[in-house]
Image (cartoon, rainbow, N blue to C red; front, top):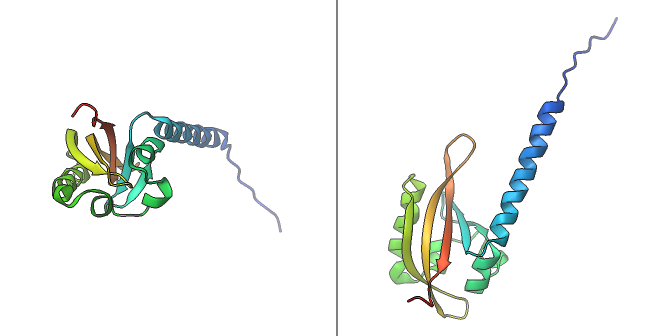
Length: 141
């Protein structure tokens, strides 16, 4: 009767995981503090990211939009097809820059947004959604 033990030093793995966690946290802080509206959707078009600036511009809090269909719930009917197409293309890996569309706020005011839509990929390079970075150009128009 006896015991055989095998050990492995996993310090480097733990250090790498801690660094990845720190980087992910830093990126989340950048997104949250950005002076541009940033949103994310999953492959079903459901909102999974909504930063403070998006909330400030639209009047919709993060809690109000998370898990909701972005196009059907927050884009006016006459622009749902074109915005949906931009997001669909991004989900296929075709990114769009400088797409302009009107967004209506919670208080039904029109805000003109200039949008860049980028494909979001997981660690295995499979598309997991889209991240949109916008600019409020209402004053320019």
